[in-house]
Image 1 (cartoon, rainbow, N blue to C red):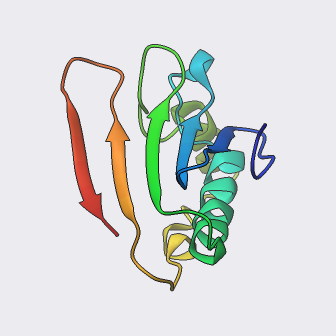
Image 2 (tube, helix red, strand yellow):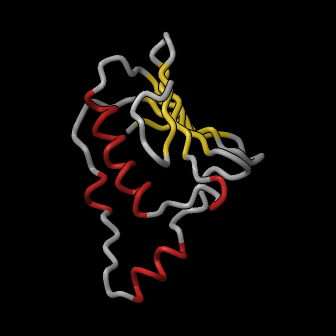
Length: 114
């Protein structure tokens, strides 16, 4: 069952406190659009406040982990002079949690602490 109920990000917490986070826009190679951007911000805040989360594993649905920003959305934003990357809104205070990035390609995986 999905833990947080996002539209573009699937989340599942197992009994060991491992939260599996899946970027879920495989038709766009999991590119970050405005919806996913907001959901990432909300996800970070929820993870920081979730006492049951011990470890986070992040992966992408389909054949790509994440292709970056959604260029189609960027073009639309630039055309309407309404582009706001919202980067600073992704910062959330909270205790550091171990993150594992599970890459879909053959490039392996990374371990980092945020």
